[in-house]
Length: 383
Image 1 (cartoon, rainbow, N blue to C red):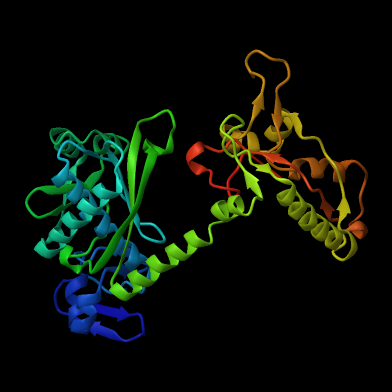
Image 2 (cartoon, rainbow, N blue to C red):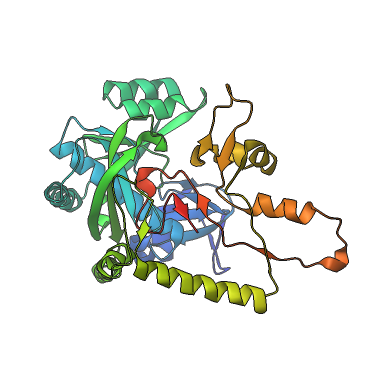
């Protein structure tokens, strides 16, 4: 079989080879750095056997998908550490993210001391260097396997899959097994640098009506210096956090009796907002060719049904009334674009009128979940 590599060169083999073995054959250093493979554009596990001609790219931590595999493995090490320290904990999900990874657990809230203890256990697991193995089961067998382990959330995930599905799992050592599509590293010892950042509450499947879980956030790098630089950037972000600085400078505050995501701007903060507003409006009016409009703070829900927002965004809107009981239901506007459309539609237009630019300094309302709000970046009312 002929394997065409990313640089256009080719390798030929007389028998089937795993992605990992091909990586080592290309160069031992590449084999050690490999996190995953990409076969004909599809990301695959290092354990994947190749038995026909294809295009192959070996993914390392320098590749986005390689980072995901690396950090996904770190999330499994986190889960194993938690199960070792707190055996009754139930596992939910633990994906890689753009900056690290997280894992959701059914457990009491974690303290910083808990995270430090979990980190220490993760270091033990990495030092043990257990081989990470992949295996599959038919759907019904997979459900029984997770049910026997009392992993209710995993059972639910499997039950949502088609009946003819073949379910993949990854094991680390003799005891830890997790439901996972992969890909993963070959061994726990390949994770070189990691840090648990924080923990918070999270809803199962992002649904506030479902179970409240505890989410642990972490990050992982293949170089300790890169990890140190990232952690320093987090500390710098804290020092520059607008939520802290804005309060210290006396620009805004929040009050429990008024509500989360509903900031109060002081005279000093209001003066700053007014200056910014006048600056942008002057540019729009005098240099950018916009025409100023003014529209209502609310509208019938019919408007948002027409625009499509109602079907896709209803849960994040403030609705005044009951669709089943009231003849008319009003909604506080989460955006102004549907309103501007009707201003445009108010009179007949010619293509010669284009472009037409409308602008409105508008107050919007969005029913953000409490866990999504922070300072002024995510609020329930903003202008």
